[in-house]
Length: 265
Ligand code: IPE
Ligand code: IPE
Ligand code: MG
Image (tube, protein in one colour):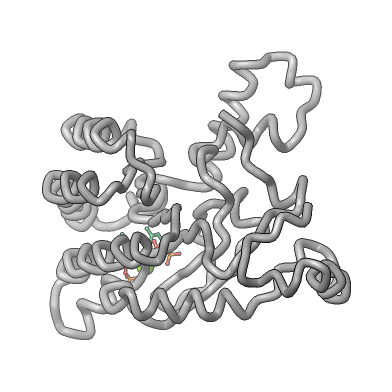
């Protein structure tokens, strides 16, 4: 597998449309509470937003979408809510994988699957296998995922594969063992629900992502809201450590450059 560019080792190409959008889908419980419904009603409704955003990414030509569905800390929730979420995940897999496949979506799950019901693990494996040849959209669901879990596991895997790295290693040695080593770093990170925090999501990969926070609750989020986030992303000046003047200097000879992917590393 060829190595993907790293935002710290080189200056990545940037463009008008993010290549990778990573979303913390937050606010399901509050959405339900506002309607005097049980929290689980919000989770159920949230699945519709997932459908909407997946199809918006396909029509927008966004090649990578990553959705945080369950964090390694969400086990701390009441047992009934956790078990409802597991059931919902299972049903969504049963009902949606064929449709994802028909639409050219490659589906993957990242996270520690060891705590999941074997039936759920089996459904995930089947979904990943069924869609493995697709490349229109790379959809990743982060389930029982934690950024710290990912980093610790990457170190373990690296040292198991190359014990000599104990003496010293560089970023790329470690990065290739992260759960999402197949994807470019997220260009755009979105969190719905009003909180402004990472909650142990992709700690390594968010190093130079553009952050977009919205008060909108996840069940209300959809194609139009995604469009607003992309519009905000387009206004950002991604400097990767350089000065604004340097960027303007770079762009002049390339003819403006914001329309196209610019490889200026
Ligand atoms: C996000 O919505 C879904 C999961 C974390 C599984 P929440 O359930 O966190 O909703 P709020 O934040 O309580 O409103
Ligand atoms: C983050 O949401 C995790 C997911 C959306 C899956 P939480 O609702 O669990 O985050 P905190 O607890 O408010 O930080
Ligand atoms: Mg929440």
